[in-house]
Length: 514
Image (tube, rainbow, N blue to C red):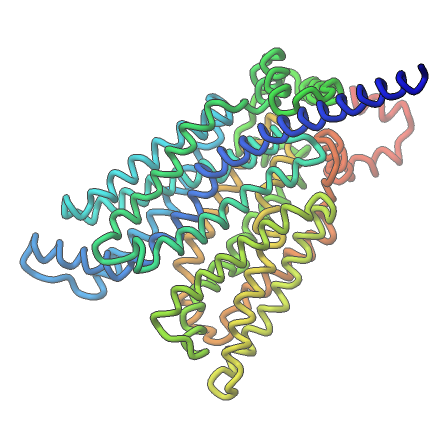
């Protein structure tokens, strides 16, 4: 009798174990689908649209010249062609800055998920404009297309990490939010792949290449509506507890939600009676002083560290290394693959290594490689193997950037700001990112002209300064609740007041508080 009971009990335990595994699989599947649906039409578009414009540069410039010749009977001068091309290139960061500024109000009024869905309208308009530009014989349509593409990228770069960070469980928050960087890197690589001359980068097919960004937008519009809104947004912003629990059920399955709901309610109570902050209000609020300084430093360093400028030098260095001109486009794909590999690696290790170590290590290694790169460039014509060292520096610099700064910077505003301040914080981050992208794009050719082989000296200073700031002032946020992180920053924000109170008696402190 006893063996039968034990056998029945064992079967019951086995069945329960299988059910639990199935429930965890369903839970993880919904979270994975949410990440993929948000990413494919989100930050993927940012990376993809950066690289697809590079391959058809010559073809678009020829198209502009031919169009002007048909209109006026006279060709464009070379400096005018370059000026018009700079307008096309500059329209993207200008649109991105606009998108970053509208992302905050969109996230508050429409919600995180709905904002991502509405954002696809901009890229659909852009695809139509660029796809029909040659047929309409209008290079102005390409400029306008790049502006709308930039708006799409500016909105998604702000809202996607916010949406995923608020939807993920605490123990996976960093890894889930960091997928934004992985999708950016994936977009960079696929943009480089589709841009090769054998695919869509040819003279006849470049309008299709520029319009191909409509495909990720359509995929997101089909998949994302079936997935839940941010639970924190539903409860804290909307006050809809039932919808919040329903969203958590979809994301977490049958797991116990009581502790997570208590944490969200505690955050709601902490900010009760407050409204969503405006960006300028954060500058006036001493309670977020060090959070604000941190995102300003790190968001500025993202563009001022010189990672994007490495792509500027890539073609030149690869030619000096003896790579045939027609093969360079394939080698450049390797630089995008480096960023993708490190972004995925960062996803895997972030919950073990922590945020602070990854950013600190990334900028420290970049500073070292900047020095080596400048030495290699200065000796490139004297020593035969120096071009190969320069190549190594390019890949190492991009790898160092991808392992920490590229991804972790984007998730920090989600973790260090509360629900009412988060959209405004992302507006500030996004504005700095796009403004500095524009500044570097305009200034880097002059930096090269003035400093020649030592053009990476300003970027070295940025990397060292950022690493020092992170090492001394940025607290670790791994595995902490939003309230715990706020308390960590409050120790520094109100440090002066704490020291003053140490010199006062209880009655004086009480009277000050009153």
